[in-house]
View 1 (cartoon, one colour):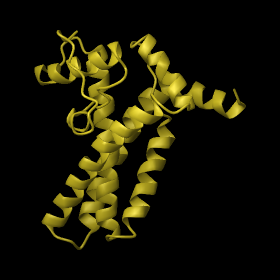
View 2 (cartoon, rainbow, N blue to C red):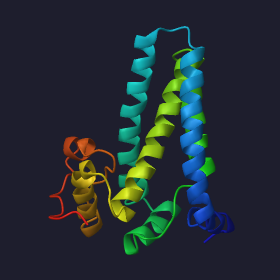
View 3 (cartoon, helix red, strand yellow):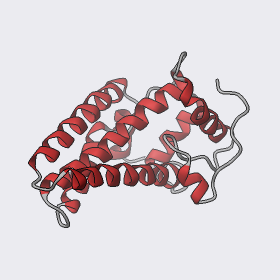
View 4 (cartoon, rainbow, N blue to C red):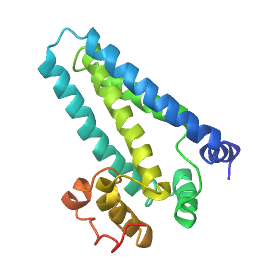
Amino acid sequence: MSGLARAIERVMISPANYWAGFALDGGVAAATIAVGASATPAGPAAIALALAAGAAFYSLLEYAVHRWLYHRWPTIVRRIHRHHHADVRLVQGAPCFATLGVAAVLGALAALVVDRGLAATFAGTVLAGYFAQSVVHAQLHRGRRAPRWLDGLRRHHLAHHRHDDGNYGITTTVWDRVLGTARPAAERAR
């Protein structure tokens, strides 16, 4: 393994990175959405559309990253994700600078099509999706008294941990159903 791969792995398994990611992703997402929505000359309907587009895009991105980067292609994150499957109590996450970088690139690309305020709103919503996924995933594995509405997602995700050839969605089961990777949910939420 290269020195860069080892450095990325150290960051990903660091509790400091995990908690910094929560703080940065949530805070930067909220600020980016607020600033973007207030800076656009577009009206409320366009802002709502940017929010909806960001949420829909994130749900597909979450599915794709989990399915192909974490389970299919031979990447450093796939190797690290295997640790999560071996022990769900491990505290690990994407490098906090990577999620911010992805959001910045998406915002820059969106700004080629729409004004910068709407682009920021879209990118902030994508980042908020990652933040939500992090919160939901933590609850699925560590939440002792998680909200009842998470029971279906917990069963869906636990079935993924039993048979990792499906159920790649974490915050939604939509893409698993659309793309044919939905597997029967686990019988009981743990």
